[in-house]
Image (cartoon, rainbow, N blue to C red; front, side, top):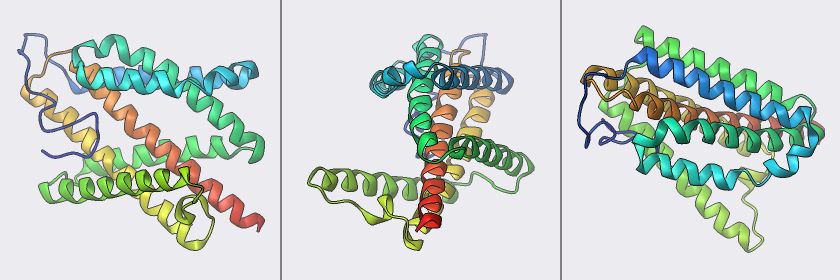
Length: 240
């Protein structure tokens, strides 16, 4: 099974010894809920204590380091993922607070839309409306890879003072680009649902519940950020 989520790969559930205590979908769901709760509490603490925003600005660096460690040391996930959720929450809270000061209420709208998309995709997956077929996986993986390359090139040229209008602009094309990226990010949730199901089917070790929850959170954070960018573009366009 192919996936575009960097936290998941065809080898995610291989390379370790299986035990009597196997992961379950319910266990992964419970741990996902816990990680989201930690992230939300951490993010909202920045809003409650504005002084934390200065710390949160730099929180993305340790969050990235923890994510890399978790990907390569999956058995450490029960320790690294809660810390990752805490640190990532500070980073998201700080960013959201700064955006709220310019566009009041926008981060809250993005949170509501993110959970709305999440539950919609979950219903579509459980009902069979969207199936994680090989062609589907390949298509979304290719689209996600293309977006990643596009962002990387845009970041490189921005070093030389060149801004990509599709990313930083508020034209109809820029808005359309963000809509496409949001759709691709939402479709990546299907990968997470499928790999969690697969982990239970093959009886992966119980610690993989934490790793599965981590991979789901990575996708949700990406989805939230893309929705937030889309809303900012719409807000700027309405002000023009």
